[in-house]
Image (cartoon, rainbow, N blue to C red):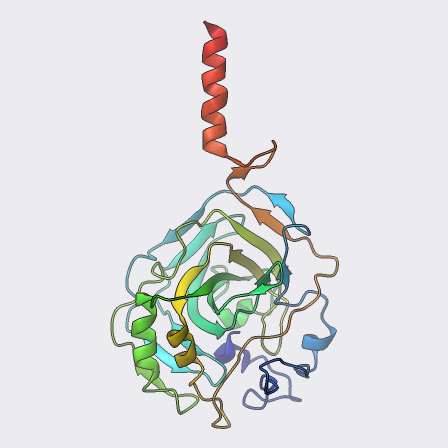
Length: 298
């Protein structure tokens, strides 16, 4: 995650163009650790993790507020970072707040992982989009990345479907111009708004404090992973796998192995009320209570 950003944070023992993802075995299974060193191996608040309802505690936060997310990204460029493909945002008015976040966060970039980095109850999804923001009290993502909870990342999961995701088309069409060369960029061949890849249900999500998922694995991130997944076709997933890494090989996978939760709190937020034997939306429950009160008053 945040492949361009971490280049400025990497210790002298590892260069930005030296770290890589493990090579899958012939059966597609990854049998070796990342060996990225430093906090990636010694940290206690690392990401990604397996998100399980059984390990989570109930959360109740104010709604998310997405400011200017409906606007197409200005002068959007797609970059092959060598570890993902990334769309940068340079508009400071595109911001996120609410949802239990400790302030206003500015959108910096969006990038993709194929399969998902986070799993839900052990299930890995076809893709995961990371929407990376920095706390507006800091001047940049680089500055915020050195401070606990000063980076907020929205994770959006994608399940494999028999239908193409139309919002992926503009990304994949542009990616064909940059797939063979790490560091290469190209103007996005169409308009894309940050709102486009968000799920409709933005009230059901997991929240925890963690890290970047690439070196230096700095533990500065507030993670929000929505539980509603969006569709992406198998053909589209396969096109992502044609992106080349810095050594010129196809980037078949670009997800980090799961990390232990350790002593961290994992929070699950939903607008459903589970106080009874069934799940009832909070609004519906309120209406039911009001109706009963009206009947009793007669």
